[in-house]
Image (tube, rainbow, N blue to C red):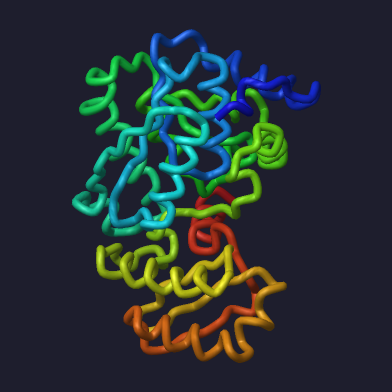
Length: 285
């Protein structure tokens, strides 16, 4: 990507410099990469600061990663000019992950970082690992994956540099990243209510149902899995189109074909952390 070598506006350069200063001087840095805006900004700044030969994107692949997200991550890493390796992860084999408590993300990230340590770091000569936590997420109580990062000494340059969500998107736009305005895309397991088991079949149903919505142009869409019921969350501006023809019938048939019996649209719209926040707030409140 030629854009990362170009001069940045002064305000963006200041933000970028703060992040780059927190990368240290690793011989080679591995970036836990999902293709979302946070990890793509981190990967781009690391490539800019260290060079492509000292930066490696690591994409964890499992049934909780939608195929469309997997393809997009490859395309974005190629645009940035960073090499990408896929790392199969097996969180579904962990009973604690399957149990789907509020700490599910801790077990998922533990699986990812453990496999990076055991299978990737030495093979690719990595001397440090970083991931894309931002400063806003760092203070949220529903981010147990941060504890796994701490346990594995994973760097969090965006958060440590004080970059919140708005800052990250500002940098992404200045760098010309295709993820700059991409909606947040949590893993598919986040659509399953806590204490309802995570299974590969449920993840497949969710992915297939959300693909129906994406094909209709609903770029930010989440299908919550409630047994026979699919509860669709969309931005408020998309609700009217979703419940009127021709989209209504297409959505109903497509989501039912994914394996659900009933299809509902949640009038509250997209709700980040809807399953986790009420539980962890009770614990920490």
